[in-house]
Amino acid sequence: MKLVFATNNLNKLKEVQEMLPNSIQLLSLKDILCFDEIEETKTTLEGNAQLKADYITKKFGFNCFADDTGLEVESLNGKPGVYSARFAGEPANSENNMQKLLVDLQHKTNRKAQFRTAVALNINEDKFLFEGICKGEVLTKKHGEKGFGYDPIFKPEGFNQSFAEMSTEEKNTISHRGIAIQKLVAFLEKNYS
Image (cartoon, rainbow, N blue to C red; front, side):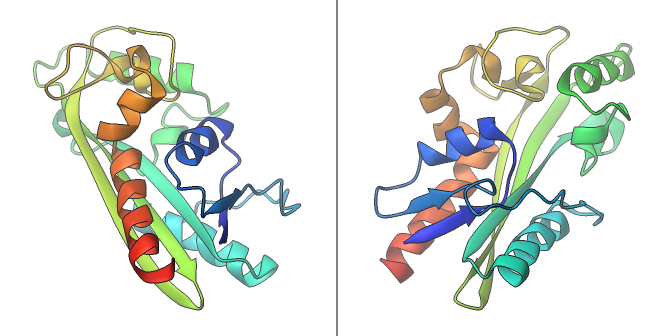
């Protein structure tokens, strides 16, 4: 089965590729010659994921899935949330986003946070949503060189390492995206294999 993953993020693509069974051929946006910048204009993770999946299905005709992820910090009323990728404004990059978050949390004792991923699947004209949540806390400084996004400052519950200190395999078994993609894979294997 061919499935397009509607992302330009090569790190996400690599992470997800490692989780899929061989029966699913994962195609990137580049593989289908989609070089469009799909604007994330919705106010929820689910809305943005569905928007991206719908864009690819409508314009290119492929079965497709898309995700949107947010880091939700308890003491910041769920921010940065849906705006995680653009939290520090332009130019949007992980380093600026992490620095802004660390400054915003400087005087907060409650550093509880969760990563939440919504995955929208469009397949054979049907639509499905999957969610993954990983609870943890925001560290006071960066730890580790692996991963991407907020990984160096997020420590999942029950672990002594940040996501950026874990191997991809370790991270995928417990991460928000890993959980959502596991649900997606289980659903595809049950209903479409």
